[in-house]
Amino acid sequence: MAMQIDPDVCTACGDCEVECPTVSITPKNGVYAINPKTCDECVDEGEPRCVPVCPVDCISKAA
Ligand code: SF4
Ligand code: SF4
Image 1 (cartoon, rainbow, N blue to C red):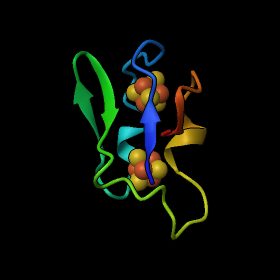
Image 2 (tube, rainbow, N blue to C red):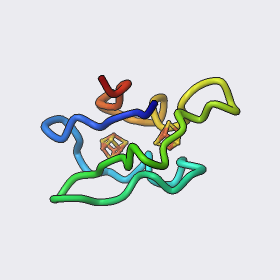
Image 3 (cartoon, rainbow, N blue to C red):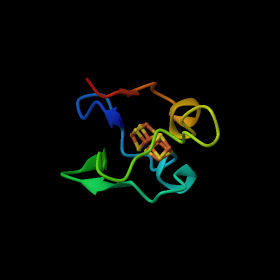
Image 4 (cartoon, rainbow, N blue to C red):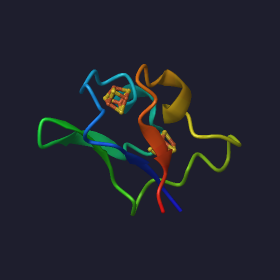
């Protein structure tokens, strides 16, 4: 249960990083990545906070 960032699309803008209540989004290899061990999909809020703030729509549910 976690979201993931497509590294081929992420522009490393950092907009999602500041939105994450669990501090699961960090810089990695020149883009950003989500730690699947700590991302809880913002379950308490009903929807992932990172998804709507991403200008290139590259955050999705991990398979
Ligand atoms: S879904 Fe929520 S907890 Fe997971 S990375 Fe996005 S903002 Fe952080
Ligand atoms: S908001 Fe989107 S493009 Fe910006 S760092 Fe996050 S995943 Fe990458």
